[in-house]
Length: 88
Image 1 (tube, rainbow, N blue to C red):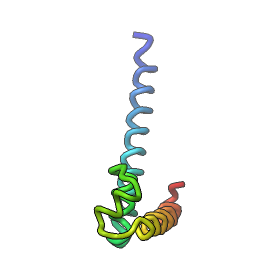
Image 2: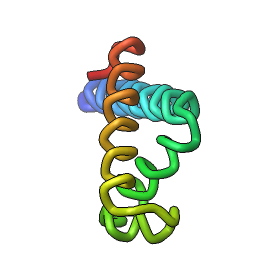
Image 3: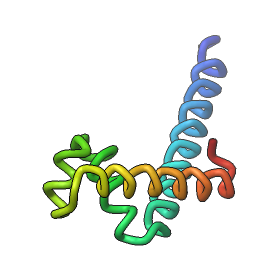
Image 4: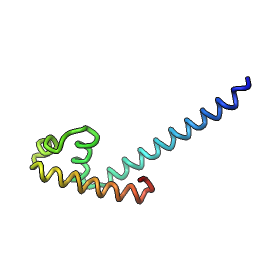
């Protein structure tokens, strides 16, 4: 079949993309794990679970301002860790 080489190339490209995506996710998870729990938890609640700052504050038993600072600081540290890993 004349299409077989093209199909194989597309399959290899998809596999390479999936592998790269998986590796990026693993590196992201490692960077999240490297954050102290006091910063990791607010970031995960806000950006993984989609909670508002007010909901994060209620969940953590803090003020909205404190939750917002923890989220902002956590994101800044996460961004720095990701840059060191070559992820922008």
